[in-house]
Length: 136
Image (cartoon, rainbow, N blue to C red):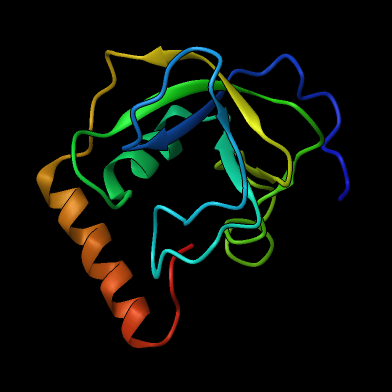
């Protein structure tokens, strides 16, 4: 895994529906919050609040979405699902790691997307699923 340089000072976020507390570790090896809920080999984090909002809104499960402020415990790399040909240069600042990430806080006052935006995204994901492309 190639490390992303100079990212130690960025705030990182993780959007989910899981109810976590300060100090909890989010680790790979559990079922994904998305798609077919396969065992996740990576944990995902982002340096943009908007990407974390999408994560919180689209995660499977009961309850409200939550956005945690997290710190990686090991090297991180660009998330290839959101970079390369799709979004060259990683404008969403989306990353993944095989190491745990630690919850160090929670964003309580975030604003979700409009119902129209959320429906459009879910419709788009459904179309991808029909094409055999499954969200992580």
